[in-house]
Length: 172
View (cartoon, helix red, strand yellow):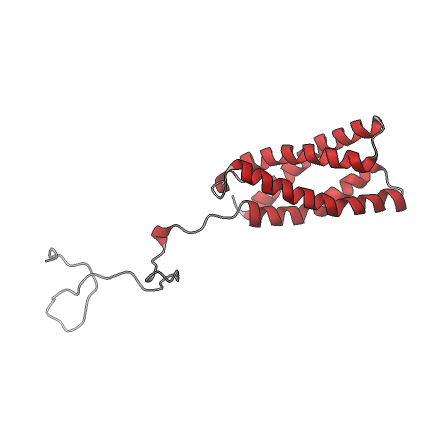
């Protein structure tokens, strides 16, 4: 899956996470919970929802870098750092601009989308490195060799030019 398709899948998974996020926030605020506390709880529910979809659907071929508990931990840390940035913006939108809590929450989620994708792509689901069979390594230095593959021995063809075509004779 190329980056554009992963971005679209990430967006669809994130968009589907809006449902549990907004539902939990609506439920908690209607029960009298302050909108900031409700936003934190709603985000935690959405983190798990989004992780499951993203891990199983968007990055299923890149899950080799770490086991799922480590991927979930990294994903949760990223999204909680994101929340620490979004909460002041949420306060500004609700307190200063008098935007409804749910609408303000939606705005902050949309604003953080591209950054979350970039960090998830780079640090949580890194692309697999080239396999050792595709690289030739020089004496332990860790530097990839740029030497061409070994060629077959020149054929004794009676002319002065060298031919690198495979020889019909068996090798000694």
